[in-house]
Amino acid sequence: MIEHFSFIISCIIVGIILFQSFFIAPSINKIIDSKEAAKLLRYIWPKFFISISVLSFFSLLINYYIGQENTVNSFIIVCIILMLICYFITPLINRAKDNSKNKLWTVLHLLSIIMTLITLILNVLVIFYWKLNA
Image (cartoon, rainbow, N blue to C red; front, side):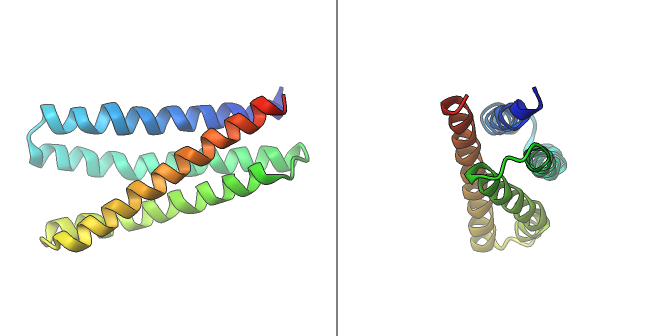
């Protein structure tokens, strides 16, 4: 059973990313005024990035515990790094927005989106790997 945890965690991560990106964030922006939406999103996104980092770290630990040393671990390590980078650039993104540095905000925000998309893709690849080797 424990050998399937990496697969399960990747499924959870994919679900979190899709739910947050396609349902939570757009809904907040549509139903709450922009100032309050900004507060809420600034509260949620760092937790989003840390949650995915922690889940990925647990997946990596489990893989090492059961002796799985393969490409999946490389994908998981990349996910951890990308999500930690997103976590640490979030205050920079917020500061750029607060100081009306729109070009910097656009670049950093796009960077966080790209890193989240890469994390999504890598977790989908982990799922396919486990399904192909099950």
